[in-house]
Amino acid sequence: MRLPTVVARELVYRLLTGQDYRAAVVQLIDTEFLNYAIGFFKKIAEAKLNNQQINLDWYRKTMLHESLPKEEIATKLG
Image 1 (tube, one colour):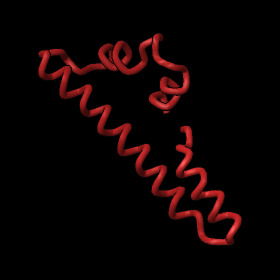
Image 2 (cartoon, rainbow, N blue to C red):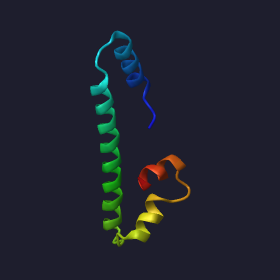
Image 3 (cartoon, rainbow, N blue to C red):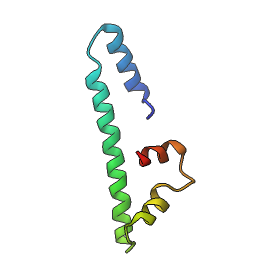
């Protein structure tokens, strides 16, 4: 996960001023997870609209395709 510049500045500012930074980190993690979940369900909906069967082979072919960045594949593998 890459930190956007604005979020990184906010975290550094909170650390340097002694403020609690944990809420910002939790919000960032929640946002990343929500974006992942929405993208995942969007791909499932597209497959269903195209009358594709959702099974392990579909998941491997769609979500773990070798053309994807290694970081993205690692995230999807857990």
